[in-house]
Image (cartoon, rainbow, N blue to C red; front, side, top):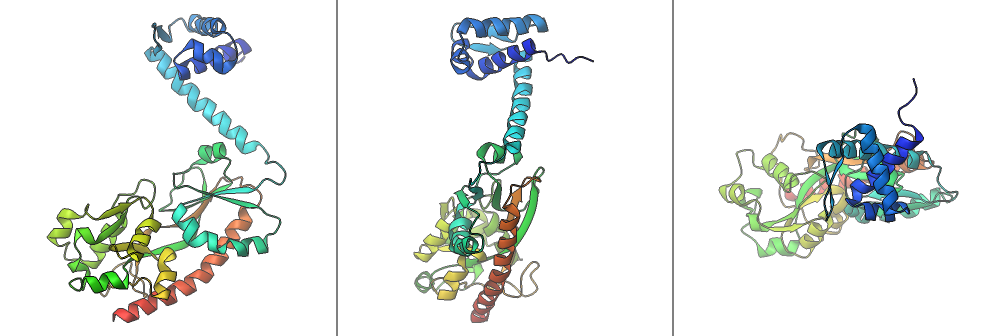
Length: 338
């Protein structure tokens, strides 16, 4: 059976899509580098073929009919899928760097200090780290030219391979100076909302109080004190966990620390972990921290670009070595509290 998508119809659809995006035949013509009359005529031919209008013409702008709005949505999905497939299939330029998207706090606090080892082990593989924390999917990665992405989240990617390489553990942290200035804060139950430093988005789609709420519910199984339950939104707010951690270092309050990002500060004594979880707390580790709902993972298309497998293997090697250091530091912090 012959396809209805003959060359003429494809040309009409192209003009309709441009006009729909610009809501103007004139702007569509500039986008397509043809005349305004040609765009208008091609859209008119499409409407005649469909036997129904797609736009209501007004002096100021084109207005969709319901049928035009439906067709535009279908075309956008189709063109986006074709574009993503083409970008995915296109071979990278010879010698092009491998683009790796990474959440900024993890990039600065964990990944970047270790990259020297990666380049020593893989001198022929150029890696370009892009700091961003937006959610990713196959189409967006193709459009952005990303070979892989490192994310801190619970996983569940529908169209990408999900490769966890490092778990995460939560523990509140503060500077020794802040604790000395607040002798009334001897346990988690003594915390007030204004003491808390928040990362407003632990991962894309997370509740603004995700990590503090998880830890407090574990630390205070009898329920949050009224001042916390009623005033949790108070305190200082940041859009990166590294900023909340920096505020804790500066003595501005108590941040919810992620072990991967605070272990060096704990080891040096610049931060301390003053609060213990009750004995027998579910999801608590032997080192005294609470297992986070999220972890670090490398996500990539099934047809991964050359070099992604080497990056993943290196990440897992680095993570295994880090876990030994992390667990020793956290155990030492727990022993100090007991």
